[in-house]
Image 1 (cartoon, rainbow, N blue to C red):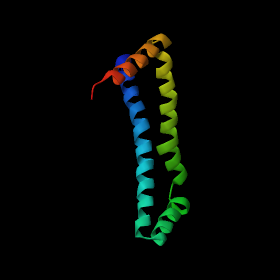
Image 2: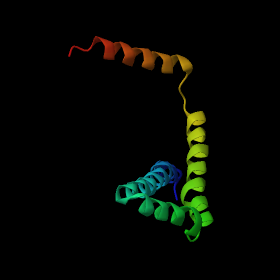
Image 3: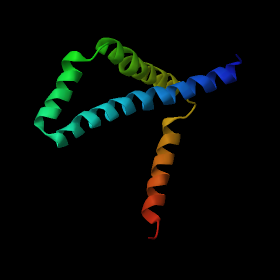
Image 4: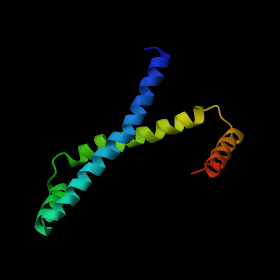
Length: 106
């Protein structure tokens, strides 16, 4: 694989490794919390299943949530430190966008 294609692949993997684990985590927890609408017994049953009876719980937490987020963080810092911007450029962009936003006429 050519270096440019490899970088493209890693950046797409970086994006997905942030969105997918958080999306799965949020979806599961929203669905579990939504069972409270059916009453406390339904919620307690769903929460008990997630806490005590979920098969492959350690595998799911490790390979679906933690490892992708660790990759996302590490590769994010790699991208950050490879950037060729300076603090002056970042300050100029930030101040310029702030002034632009403040000067907009609604």
